[in-house]
Image 1 (cartoon, rainbow, N blue to C red):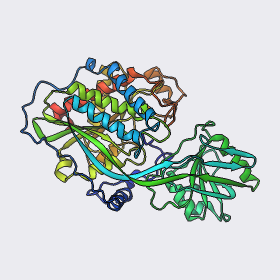
Image 2 (cartoon, rainbow, N blue to C red; image 1 turned 180 degrees about the vertical axis):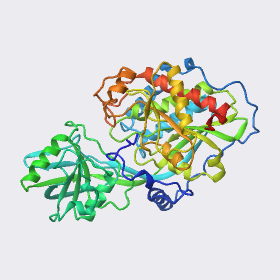
Image 3 (tube, rainbow, N blue to C red; image 1 turned 90 degrees about the vertical axis):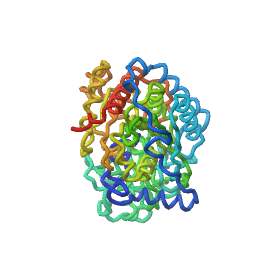
Image 4 (cartoon, rainbow, N blue to C red; image 1 turned 180 degrees about the horizontal axis):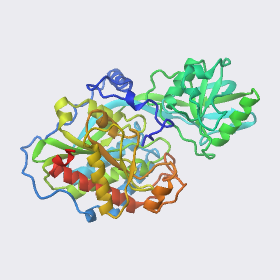
Length: 498
């Protein structure tokens, strides 16, 4: 999951617009450019309806909760964990682990009787080649305490450390504009805290101010647990940039106060990579009406991503199994997205490739991203500015969770996952979520029995997201709710008319 906060996203969501609705995004333009450079044309987007004659609708599609099982979810999560570990230790775009996962999903879907296609595209893939380090005074910080930011170029810089916007507990936003950096000394390494803008905004502003290197400081990150946000698009990035853990931040602040130097070395690269999303359909009797669900298939490069987002993938595969053989009124379509973690590239590519008629046929898009957090809660999406019908989807999902014995939590994600492309394209959206590394609130803890003040998933975007600590009961509840609502809407799409 691309976390919905400035720390993890790099452009404001108003900047991510759909081609045909407003303008082509910088990311979309980049995808077109690298595709042409690689001489690898994208395959056409899957058609809305089946190629065979439309069948007659069968009995109600919504599977009972008993058809979604913890055993089925566990089997699929174990399979994803095994192939991720066997390959590169992750399923990031451009990796052998991702390709193996895509093949696994195809096989599972075909066994459940679904029609399967691939949506091929070329996207920037980021590789951390190891060896990055930060030398401050007598200390040397390496992997775990310093990590190149996704899409930042590699390099080596030695220069004076300048701490920006660390004077007060709350950010003033000084790192968001070039003017906020003042007159930097030559070769400066700037240290910038989380702010009111996105990390890409900060890096671009630092470059414009003359910085030679950028360090994204995470003072709350324990030793060995630094996170790396994506900068979404490598275009325009010219200086090395890395995330730093709490101990590294403390050392840098101390050196900056003394007017000292540091050395930052990052060994990373970005290359165009052909990849694919997987699209599956269960044809309905009304092919011009589509109910779509999606989950991203890729992980970050720092771990196997069994909860994020193997759990969403397992949820959709369980739904596919439970619906296999049914003939709903509306076609049900599933999307297993590539390159979500680096910038929602797969879902945006897919949606931008649809014709106006194909977009209009999609009645709703439902997203599953992290549904098995070990200290999680049962959340449903409630996005500001979502298209008409989204509030109805929210209420339907909340009611389904209640019927399954849960207490739904209404949550805004800020466009931090693959529903964003559909939302910006005018499609009603909804989704389920069990929490990432943010601390669980007292209200969420009371509703779910989780521990307040602790993260919903302490292994978010880390190597320990290996499937060893998941809440499968919560995953089954959220998956069942998603299946119930998808089936109800497939047989009665007029439910969306709010």
